[in-house]
Length: 418
Image 1 (cartoon, rainbow, N blue to C red):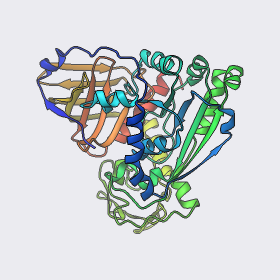
Image 2 (cartoon, one colour):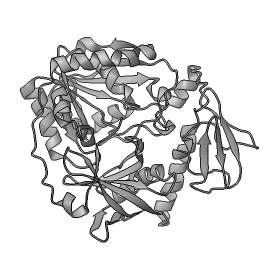
Image 3 (spheres, helix red, strand yellow):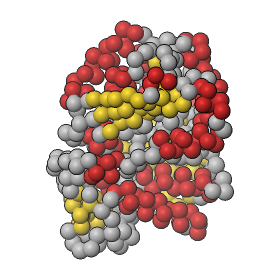
């Protein structure tokens, strides 16, 4: 999947007026039927099946539907499972070059990890005025390491405002089939899902917002590498370790960063020549001595601990040259030139475009940042910005996207006294 890109000067992009806000449209039934039809080959290829639990509690709808986010297949799974028309909360870049079609499908655009006051109003409009259910991915980003990404706090405020049942869809196998780090290469894995009524309006009214947060944290607690191992899910493709360096960027043996490489079934640190093999069940097997980690999420958690220590002692800092894209409307990703991205405990500073761009974003702006691998087949990406303009940064430095996302979360937590 690609995005329409246009090269344009920074000044020209800055002069483009912001698009007018548009209320969510009722999903077009014929277009929804077409999506379900086009999804059949992919779902057939993974032998998709699903089960429901306690759905009698949800009634006929409308519902607020929450879903964990592992890969693009999630949208096709939703089209198969949800039995009524529904709007979809999606990232604004998903509408670029195809706004009319996506709005007709029922998409509600928003900006990931940017405070969007209009989103709650749009969701209430869809449920109350249109009478449609709403699907949203509260993690707001694909999982990097097969475990849940941080959820926004106080989701219960939205639940209480909507006064509709909250339904949860959990997928199994979607991450294993197409993990984000693996360059969009599909593996042969069966995929299933479960849909259950998580909360009724009466339960939402009775519970405190903090109690709802705790319930959601539990519902979104998963570890797909452990799921793969526990269920004996065999993945024998010879590219299964490709791109693994995107998440395992730090060597636990020599502590160097940015010098790891995942290719084929092997993972190597080019600084100390330590070699791991990723076996058919997702485990890391050290072939050059005593391994530090066999479970990828444990390795990733160790990297987080290292970043947390850097933030605490004031040594965390990332500087990289970047190519800069901007989205200010739904017509294109505008490539505006080159610049430098700096990140430390004080937040982000993005400068460039021959001195015309200087954007700063403080540490308490958001609990995470929008980051992705091989984004729209362009490259690894970190996005920062506000409701007016988003800056899509494509770093020259290797293997730093995961560290920047981890650091953003840890810096935010410490800035809030966590």
